[in-house]
Image 1 (cartoon, one colour):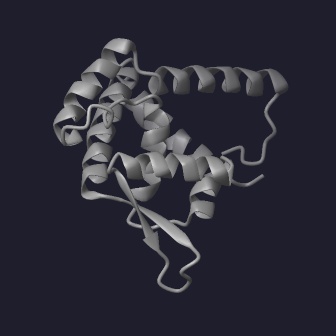
Image 2 (cartoon, helix red, strand yellow):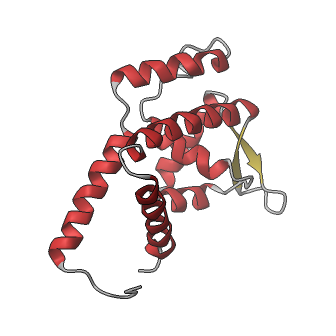
Length: 166
């Protein structure tokens, strides 16, 4: 299968455009969908009216996805995985801590290092957001045949595996 075959510039440009449109479409819920999501999440908010206000649900989902893998990354590791500055990652983590979705943990080997983990409520929020995301992807993939869906996901897996190789 044509590995290491450089695509023509116009094909790469089409890919970028399509990828941006796909991610924008999946990652930016409509106002109606945001309201639906907030209503679904409200029972988990524990009476905090601000806990469900998702100014950037995609960013929360990215952070919670990283934290849901059972690890407790340091702020440096979190900022690296999110590809954002350390100070920004720290601010975002602090917002999640204030909302009761995450907690700061001292590193057992070095007290100067701060780790971050989801709380029980944060894990519940993540699971609700994940189900919501799956429903959105099902809608998008529903426009393809079963064979096209499988091929598309297979190709995405291949691209994801190679994405980190400069």
